[in-house]
Image (cartoon, rainbow, N blue to C red; front, side):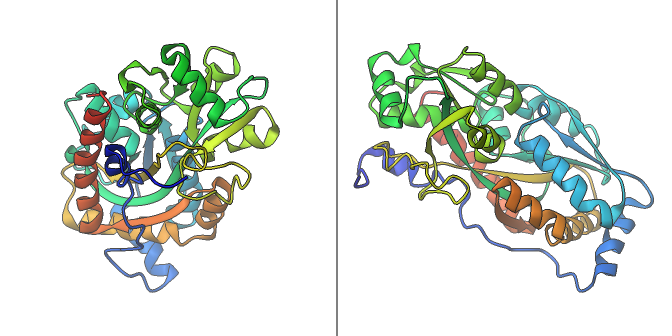
Length: 336
């Protein structure tokens, strides 16, 4: 289908919210021993802790635990813990209390930025120390295998007939899934404010809602839901990528299905406010080293994540730009 020249195209032209996927880093590491020393110096014998600001099973939890495995040879044992609720904003409010502590990290991304805007949270990523963008991930629209909806055009027809009757389950309010639901409604000429979106604090909970029959369809990151698609429990209707994905080669894109929308999620890592410039640089060195490990490369392949390493001032500017862009799109679809 040819691309539309409608106002939606102007919004969705930026909708792969990750701009250039660049491997820009602040420092260059020259040997494994230097990579290990980076972690040892900043931690000073203390254990590294990573907060996943969502329930177990979702993208932030998966990212945190893959980081834990990839960091093992660099810093030893790392603790991962979950603080769920409100699109990560509850975890964010707790995380910034670790001011000046370089042993504390938090996974974050587009979903948290959207939740901050949607919930008008008192804190944002501007209150943290951005370290590294790690991955990108596209969204997939799914239905239970028993659903009468066989294709994306079937779902579009149901939405046009009675939008509020089509419940859509996904992650936190204001996150990538709700943004995608609103953009789909807008693209088919419906009112995004009338989307019946059922928010959850984690991907596992959204999956339970969908499989129990309490929602018509689900929206999720490909990495979170691919096992259920492969097992035949869920049927994938479309993906939000510009082209078909190697992880789901038989699933058409939204544009192939007649819905002119494209959206990409991203995930990264931040430290608390108040750490020194030297500590920030050492943490960046450590995380860049982590992205070079075989364990992390394996995680990218298994999860179907796109590599999107970005560090230093470039990542800080990226985060600032994302906050402005997400606010604009939420306003455009009536979610702010």
